[in-house]
Length: 504
Image (cartoon, one colour):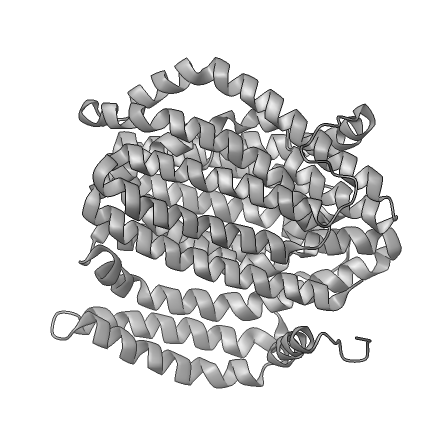
């Protein structure tokens, strides 16, 4: 196993998410000033509606990571190439057929979710959203291939460049073309990602032609059984994000959808920053399983300890800054955005710290518990979302989403700990307990101070003082933590292309 390669992937993933977060902040700030929050909500609803057709993807992009890594570990490069081309052709044909046939149904569904005064805008961008989805799904197969060969650094670079293409196109086209410009920009990003990912993949795997043109029934059957679990996950996810937005549109309105989109995207970017490094564990665990299955448990424990060490202070600091982010991003303290952010932050925190178990099961290739987690999340989100939406309007819908996240996240981590005989007491790592309690106390106290002083002082100034106090309280504990030494050693090994005790 090339350890510097793993650290390189993790660092590039971190850079990717950081740049994507900055692009997101700039783009939504720009869109708020040009098309407004209602049209942002409409765009979000259209994307959520079209994403429902991903049911026809058959989960092949997830299979590519597993089987490309497997064949390459066994020195079977030709079979790895066949896996990638077969998956790409399969999803392109099947998804293209479904999108063409279901377009009238998508237009009908959008018409029932979007207010009449904004329906024309929704129908203008719907074709672009459909084409973008088709391109993105094919690109996801190629990007998964890069993950499978442990070149997530190239994957990250392509995504970063695609985000920059999207931002530039939005700044160029939206002021003169309104919603249509947003749709064209999204399609351009998808097309760039597809071409760039294929070019990068061809440079790393011999045997790939100028275009995907080989379809192998053997490779298809090999992937299908594994992919069906991803497909079930995909169906369950349709009951999550699109359902939340549809219920919010009903019980709140499109502006509520817009603020939910912004709050959720903000937290997801922070979550992605933390999860991205762990995501490289999927090909690593697949490789370890082929070589030495006894090392899987140790790899998981280290991933979990790192995840907890990073997640607790990062989420705590984000909690403190949410009101200030509202002031800077939206231009004012927006109650809907701040409330949604607080609620979603709790749900996504639990989901984040359980990610190592989820990705370990993905690397092992046993997806039953991951699938059950998605099914519980989706089902609970629908039932609880409608119930709480009826009782508490849009706030109830968002609360239901957070509850569904927590409930579903418990399943894979509880199953993994039981299967590998890892004590549940390790869910709060012993070395991190003091730091955890310090973060909770500092963030809770900081928010109380913020809301007491925000009427008499600048909210930005108050936030900076509170954040500085938080860092003074928590920073030394993080510096003394053993995970800091581990991460520092890993980053140094990456920079020097050397692993301590290893070879160049």
